[in-house]
Length: 557
Image (cartoon, rainbow, N blue to C red; front, side, top):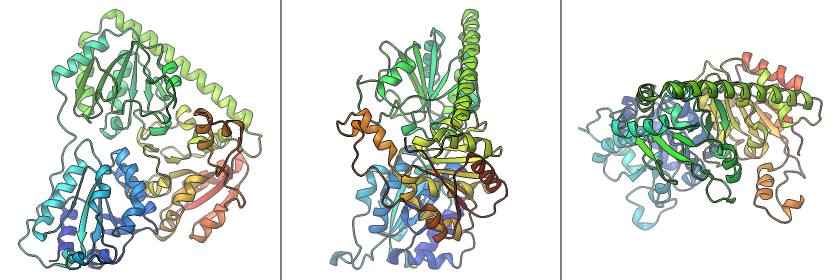
């Protein structure tokens, strides 16, 4: 057995069946070994952005670990933006890169570089394996660290001669696959429950780690018990949904800017933070803190770093979110008075009525904008909502177009079906949509991608065609970096606030994504009418056995 064959044996014992990669010379032993190993499917990407996105989406949807193989130095460099995304998401990835031959390293050969140093800030653990005897423990450690909450990417550098080195007698027992982690301490949860039981008007701020802990139903039960609306993280770090978007208490993401968040939360006296980063802000905007003055905070999370990180807490608990919410619900039921329960019922009724009123107004807005040409963002999203069959997974990388409209309409009855950015290295969405489809081949998958993001990730379309991955892509094409124009107005910047922009418009020429997609082997067409979007996208999601792309022009303002 060679080193790389031992590596594959250990991955197989961990349940890995797919390896995502773009090879170079220092990775050739892996590709050679895979020719004789039918346990794995190698998913090829033309660029590391696509490769990392594929693995990221596959790991998020499957709940397992994604394995990525990159070329040394330059290939790893190309992947760094997507590694940051995985770091921000907490996606369990094992990222590997070949390293130059150890016999050449002293002489400074071509493509030799420090691979561990650059990735260390954005991984849970990074190591270069220099002895064949250490390889089994390195792989076991990588799997275990990546999968242990708080989950995240790890990195292994594998010298090319170590991959080819003959070995025998290695301990190839499987990695220990951890559970979600210990239950939160009872005393800590009791403090959280006591604070919530004395709240006059509580709210919940919940993040992606709720879903990733399998705790969306438990969160909904706690929200109903308290009569508390549930807010998700802002669009700038929104990620996965903490509960079903059609739940009457679900309020969607908080606004992006500090003063708007304060206004949004100002009526509440207590905020229960669960499975979320404590308000990852995007642009500095007074006031310094988005938390309303005098608000009481409590926090439950699997990530100890997040609990009390930015704001003082009245109580906090660390541990498995699923178990913690289940225990907390029992404690609340023991503590809540009859008066609290009656007031909670009033709050539940109020928020349900508010949600219904907002949805009616949103549908009326979509109808009113249906006749505009080019299409407005709201009209496009209304057409997509009508087009999507039940159970469609949506990967979105088009923030100024999606406007959380699908959530606000209650489309995601299954919260697992929503995937959005947490890191904002552009080009993420194409690969992630393909990875989600590989993990869930029975589900329709829609990739909603802005034209700016598609410009970064377009190489992923080749992988869709090459591997016959039938994702339906909709490119929202407004020929600009609209999010940057919006941010310039918020900062504010004097000339951009007056409508003057430099390097924000993608014109002269306008990118032709239909031709690009066809060049990568993906069927593509341009749609201009909402009715055509609804019918053609629905047909593709229901019937297509191959990838398709639809380009839709969006009004620039």
